Length: 577
Image (cartoon, rainbow, N blue to C red; front, side):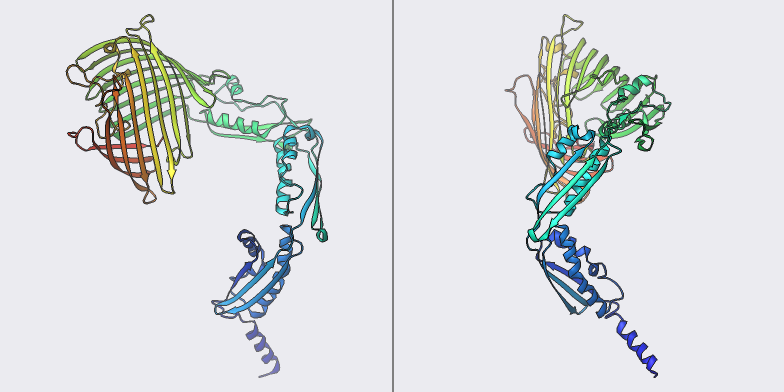
């Protein structure tokens, strides 16, 4: 073998990876907390090459030697400029073990932060708040990542407030390692704050008057990103557009003003809906609907809906005038025909009325005026009543997830009444409070509680329509009893409904699998004419399935207060709230 061939063979063998198929490097760092250790380890060159398919002893030793310098450099980011680092490299059965022991030493502390805002932003209240609450403070350890984040917070605020010509004229950190101290210098020159240019919308089916009600921005106002987001949200939530784009054209700014580029894609004018369902209270259900989204340029809408089931049938129409004023969101007129036949009553009613909707102190407020004509047959009473009913209701719903709620609830209060002196056959006043609260218990459990309380004062109970009386029993009342099967009885022994209502429920649900779970529950309460009347109660178990359309609940409930009641099956499909 020639000398050249021998040298070539020697070099080839020397460069071959040790255990080429299995050789790996394991890197460990000790002396710092786990989070910092992970950051340091991921920044090492030796860590990035730990799974390389071609590793040699010489190459690994080279990586190991450079790791100490790399660690020292990275530790300065966290404010440690004088660390002591020792390293050890051992050959393991399947590769190498690289270990590093760190003594960080004393951290460099911030002795002063000189933050200066020049230009119009100096008198901006948001910048005054930023300076007051600036995250970098004297006496705290120097952290270059926190420094960069704080610097970016100035630039983000400036961009969101319309200082598009601003720049950071000084950003400097002077470190004195021998004194373990540092001074931070930040100077931001904001320039002028731009104003909104007049806003132009593309041609659309709704007119300028309605668009102006959706617009929280006036031309000439100082630019604010929050206002832009609010405009986009108002347009998206209006119900008229499939897609909404609102962009700030900073590249077209001039003369202290910046334009907005607005693009809108309208929804189809007509919407048709159909749905099938089932509930043990109502049996099989069918719903059909139609809506005209654009009656005119003021955004008025007309919708009709038919609901058919084995217990109740209804046909309704609703004319909606949205964005009525700055304080009233919606004004509408509606009419409804309803026919209901339960085990306790039969009724047929016609109603026509108007309503308004608004937000008040975070609550949804609905005021209404309804003229109701109802013919009903309950117990041994067969009556017909005409009522003019004013009413007002407040409701609020909060949830981390509306389809499957881990933490949330719903609360509502409604007041209504009528007077014989004003187009009504009977005088009454009624208040109803309903609530539901859901709270997670561990990772897979939930506690679900609900309650309803109501009271009615009426001049002649026999003239009060069944739709305004209180009944109990059913899927969302007291399981184990039939729908509206509970309440005071008439002279013939049949349930006729009551003046008062008090029902509640306590349930624990546990999801044993990702989509499947079970529940145990107890329901209690009744409809009353006197709160001395007996309380009905039941217990039960159920199966839960988190389907794509919401939670499907299948419950078996047994009435405990009525021993002759059979075990009842209850099925409910839909979201929690």
